[in-house]
Image (cartoon, rainbow, N blue to C red; front, side):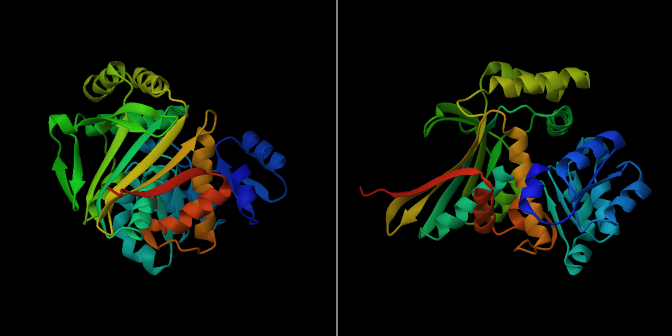
Length: 351
């Protein structure tokens, strides 16, 4: 709420199930904020809420239960829509309406939080910056980690994602085509810049990342997640394969994040390799956040994109993941202005 109030002068309508909580938040937030009770499982209640808005910002969860209900309400009422994590479900369900949504000039931006969200926007940004400085791009590699405190609903969605995917064979994209990775390619130990240092990463995919891989048809695209050790690997296998209770799976996943402790609470780094004037060239960029900033990172991503949608600021119409919905260079500029910590550098090898 605080980030929305800072990022726009528009009136804000907040919705939820508990009227007392809503009224308290609205009273504390000032005259620009009003509240309305809404039940996301009730179509009439959702429609009544959406009719009062121009942009629907959806942070409700878990997605595995709510699915595309809020997006469908936004579509019925011809409103823009932005969510934190569509889990692949929302985009799949809304794609049949894509041409109608685009024709109406509406933007449905799916998975516009931290991860998924900024962890996919950053490689598209890095690729665009590298293309402007290199004669050719050979590869784009993403390394990320998160040890932030996730909500129970977010952890439920994480569990559902692992269970739905099972133990998929790791892979990567080469010129837009999926390539199954060999055993030696499934993980990589690499030295990242301070304060991360030497760490082992494993190939990792999500629908949002795969969407990027299919679009980069002139290079190789690999995405890796930090895996702190055997305990985390065993926990992921257990969630994927064993008939465990949801509460126990949520605890396993929470502990996985906690074991991923690094000098920063979370980061995403992208390395683009290519050639510039016949010499090897590298473009690197990183986003980091510190302990206690996990919810802020999600909030700043959502509010920045929602503000761009409301202002008609270079957000493409139709149903799209964040990395495809915005001009990555412009979006990163807006995010830096909002306080996101991002660094970058370009180097050419003279040998």
